[in-house]
Every structure is written in structure tokens, then in C-alpha cells.
Amino acid sequence: MAYFIPDGGIAGIRSLAQTWREADVTLFLSSEEFSRGGGPGGRVDMALLHSIFDGFEAVQVLCLLRSQWQFLQSVYLEISRSRPPPPPLALLETALTHGMVDGLWCDYNGLIDDLKTGFDPKNFCMMSFDRAMLRPDGIIGAVLDFLGVALLPEDRQRITAYRANRSPQPLSTWASFAVAGGQMPSDALQAAARTAWDLEFGPERKGCLFTRRELDVLRLRFVPANARLPCALPWRAPGTDTIFRDDLSADFWTRLARRIYFDQAGPSPLRTSVNTTKEGVTG
Image (cartoon, rainbow, N blue to C red; front, side, top):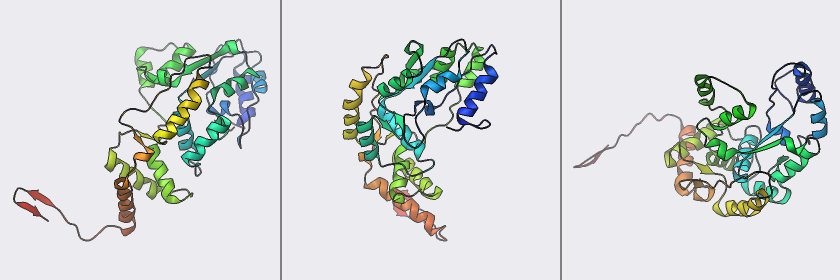
């Protein structure tokens, strides 16, 4: 784990703990890396992590949990920022078999078992990501309330109105990797895929990385597992107007091919305009 502080990782966390241990403050650390259970990034030593904060008045663990299909889609998009992600079907099979993807728990019972090796369960707070998103002030507002941060209404509104780190469109991202054939797609190819999506479906249309059948398989696997959690975690199904991976028809791929062709061909010296009138078509 590396953070934007000197030394990063464990050294950085130790430095933060030492700096603020005697101060009258609430130290809030947030990272999905705290849920890492293996893989290339290693496994978090929860007992060591807890020991770093010896001397603090209280240590609480807040987990924001989301429906597994959303979590897997988010992991896919995060991986795609730096390297080719596994195909959606491979991602699905890994999650079903191991309960984690890219070393991160997607069976949250495994995450809780990991946390128990270092932290007292009575200090756990499990929160539904989807329910928090429904709040007028969203996730940030839910976390501020958990922390007991008192802000003037105008200050809270200024903070919660800003949405950072928005994920890219999942299906246009997947399409660009599909065309790139397992390599990192160029910026031009990714832009072409986004344009094709916008033209075919509209820029605000939601997409789901998985097919309907794959989504059903995930639901059957993880809804019973979620029922064993110490909090209610509703399964949030995609909206009725969502485009699934198996909805991408020849029309979308034709648009994408056309955008790629336009990029390669460059600007044309000849332009054709078409004017449709009651008398006919001229151009």
C-alpha cells in the first residue's frame, strides 16, 4: 500500500498515528486497500494495523458495502486505469470460486473474518453503499454523520455537492479493451468507444458490465452470503433502462468501427450536407 505521504504504506500509517495520538482529533483513514485479502498487493495484517493505533481513545471500523455486481464492475474499471483487466466472465468466475477479485473481498463475510483477527466486532459499522447513495448528501454525508462532524449547512452542501473520481462508462471501456485485443487501448480508441456509446445510447444511459444471465448467477451466489452479514445489505438491481453487455448490437459496433475509421482517415476535404424537405432530399 502506498499513499501520498512520505514513505507511504505501513511507515506512513505509523507516522500518522504518532503525529495525532496525543491530539484531540478524529483521524479518519479511508482506502479500499484496507479490505485487501491477498493477491499481488498482499494481505492486510489486521492485528498489526490495530497495534499501530494503541493509545487512541477508540478505534472504529466503517465498511461501506455495495451489491457485488457493482463492486466487481468498479474493480474492473479501476484495474483498467493501469493495465488490461480480466474479461468479465473471468472476473465473475474468480468471484464465485474465491469470494474475492484482484485480492479484494467480494464475499464480505471473508472481509469481516479478516477484520476480526485484529479488531473487536463491537466496533464494526457496516453500511449499505446503495442506501447511503440515496441520501440527499450521498456517501460523503453519511460518512460525516458517522464521524460526528458538525458543519454549517452551507459548508456541508458545498462538500457533498462535489462528486470526484467518477467511474467511466463500463461498457464503452470494455468495448475499447475488446477491440484492443488484450492490450491497453489508445486514448483515441477509448474516445471512439465513448463517442459510439453516446451516439447510440446517450451519454447519461447506464451500462452494466455483465449480461443478464451473469447477473443472475452473481445474485444467487451472493444474496444468501449477504444475509449472514451483521447488517442489512439489499441487492440493488440495475435500473430498467440499463444496457447490459449482451445488449450491444451490431449498430453499436458499426458506430465504433466508423469512429475508428474517421480517426484514421483524418479530415476529409469533401463535405456532404443532406437537406430533407417535403420535395425530397438534396445534398
